[in-house]
Amino acid sequence: MSLWRSFAWLIICVVLFGTMPVLAQTNPTVAACGLPAGGVIRQSVTYTMTADCELTSTLRIANKDPAITVSINGGGHTITGGNHDFIRGSSTVLNLTDVTIDGENIDHGAGGIYVQSGTLNAKQVTFARGNGRSMMSSSNASLTNVLLVGNVFNAPALGGNGSAVHAGPTTIHNWNNVVARNNFGSGGAISLGSGATLTTTGCLTLSGNVPYDVYAPTGTTWTDNSTGSCTGAIGNGDSAEIPAPALMACGFPAAGNQDFSSVYTLSADC
Image (cartoon, rainbow, N blue to C red; front, top):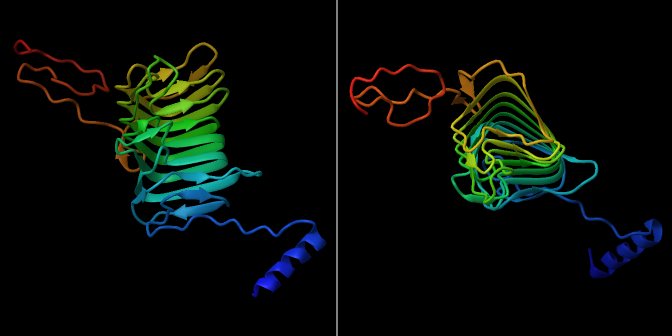
């Protein structure tokens, strides 16, 4: 189209519709693994991963009303990399299924997954090695068959900043079949903000989290309807259980997680 014709088209649009034409908003290009390496998602979309994916920058979900729905079917694969956050959304429904979010100890600042408003659903997901909160949600969140392991958030104040999950004020979090192990930070595995509620059902294993398993100060609610520790598969094909710690010659463990009650008989000084 010539320059003159393009200009004439703009004038016609203004005269007929009272506005300039709006360019179509497209989603970022999908990499070979089935997920964009970064960029801004502007339309509802479902991604199906065919291989492990490394983000080169944060994958952001644009503000939009009604909320954008983004679903990631991991197919058992892993998402690594990113910049500051893995996935950050303001008004969104984010569905994660059968995937591992591996922080690789990269400094992700506020959180690996950050959903500011809307809903976060994670099913068969492993959140591992996040340096910075693995999941920060100012919205409602549902975790089903999820493993949270080895996430670290070095905040200066004791309490209020969960290393694995930070539940924002007045949010509702539901856990069904969840293992949270060896998460370190000022709020331990999960920290509840003012007015937040957490309900745990199914199996639940909380082990080795420092300084708290669940930080639930006055004004928050944790209702535990869990039935016992988790066994078998958990998260993205991981194991809910870890081997019992190896014994020294004296008959006592040198180090390790002790998830279950045990009796040790010393045969010598340890």
